[in-house]
Length: 331
Image (cartoon, rainbow, N blue to C red; front, side):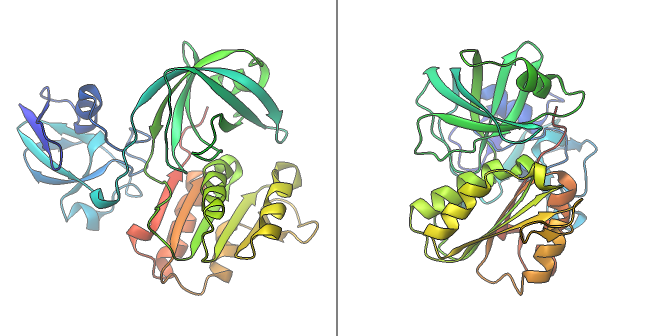
């Protein structure tokens, strides 16, 4: 029994009852995925033929309208017969070599009261290439492994990450309280499909919540370094002033690039220094006149991503214009 992936030269072996995604990963076939739990929609693909059993999934990840068009989630589709699938947006798919690297902690930075910045140097397993907006799996030790987005640009040798300390989270607690300069860890990737669409020359919208600034910062700095001429706008939602970080960096980028503007939106504290108050998607809804020619990148808590996506759809944005990375089950 096998899976035929359109555009891939060889059939992918599969055991009865395995999911499409598990079979792809086991065979080393590049395939986009994130949560692996039917919540994010990253692994959407079109079922061309075959018998699959679909496990439970969120309608946020796959709408009834999409399912009616034979779109399925690879992570929730168990295979019981020879099957053929096609990647969604295959024409936009960028594949980088998958790497498993040994890295060393070169620097640690307290970005806020609960977000720590990590700068890692690659010691073995490189070179590592990725697209701005992607993420990697960081493994600090047994049972201490999570996905985190690259905050630096693909042109930088060092890898940088923003890790938020989640109460009760083993991995983030390790990073917040025990990780030190000189420690080594394993980094695997790159992963994710909410990455910068290089061919897009029109306006770009970035919406970040908390440490969701990391992938958006990577996209922003990459765009501006390449002299992207169209408007670039960032909405950065945080709870209060103490949750705000990299303000000086954003101000410097705005001063040097007239086409870049940013808005900080505080949800739990009246704005200081001209900050806006409320929910970030509400600010977006108030400002955005339309979505023609727009490409949007969203990253942060699922509720924020879902609300911002709804605003964009209401403004006329099509799914191909929205690239979202919801930070599910961070620990």
